[in-house]
Image 1 (tube, rainbow, N blue to C red):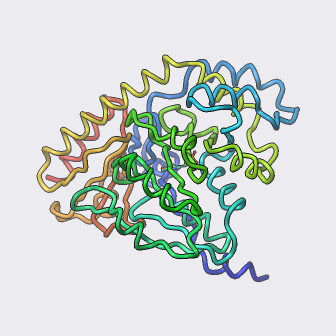
Image 2: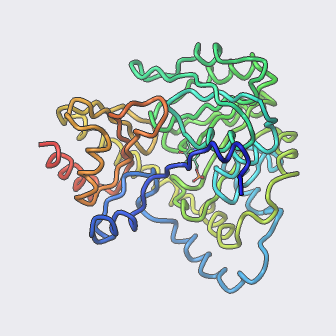
Length: 366
Ligand SMILES: Cc1ncc(COP(=O)(O)O)c(C=O)c1O
């Protein structure tokens, strides 16, 4: 049986590795593994979310809500937008990207991604017959090369993905730059991915009131501590949100995810605490890794940082393997387009884990 041509030609997406996989492969105890690979919240979910999920367990014989009004209002309040400017996705922000593609992409359309960036945009949009056009981040100056965006625009361009802070560089894009790209290209959807915005304390959400062609992606998988529940949301003008609701899977958010999301947004102390601890861990990891000979560390506005390891004599995959043997998971970025084989990305952990990681890293490199 032959699949669709596009599927025949596609490679699978390579996600970060889980603690269970590493424990099994390297004969380690799961509890001893330090995970710096997937940019999660290492302090666990909000206790209020856990309580709410537990209370909801007895009702999972019933379908979940489809309209999600209560959660929409909570997100609108958290984000400072109107209810009608919010859409929620039940397979995380990834579902939001998928619904965006289903809503706006025709076969043969082009989309622009400055490399390196989040690889899932390309993975999803290609499935709908769209073609990636690569712009670039200037890695020497650690900034978006805006000219490369303008140079990549053609009559077929349908979307431009701009991640800020960018995964994996951790860099912000200036609001003026985003605003200019949006205003000069009213026919192109400017997708601003703010998956990590809380760690930067900067948002561009007011651009949705200025431009009908701006879409903001957000997720509950990072600072909000719910990666395992798979909840994302999007913010945009009412017209875009209304189109997307026409084709969004009706029951994609489970009852448990709904309860977890609602109670996390209502737990503002948990959110503030997670941001504060995240920034503290980031600073510690940046300071300590910057002192190690052979590592070139990018300052980050997110909950992870990109490190060039070329001068250590290891490739990223060699270093990731040596660390893994000692129970540390980092992201080997070799599969990221726009980076060569010498980059790893590490994400924040508890300070205790950070210290253990730094010790192990020094041991491996010495
Ligand atoms: C930049 C960026 N956008 C979106 C996502 C997807 O998040 P979610 O877990 O909500 O699907 C990620 C996940 O790592 C990400 O790094």
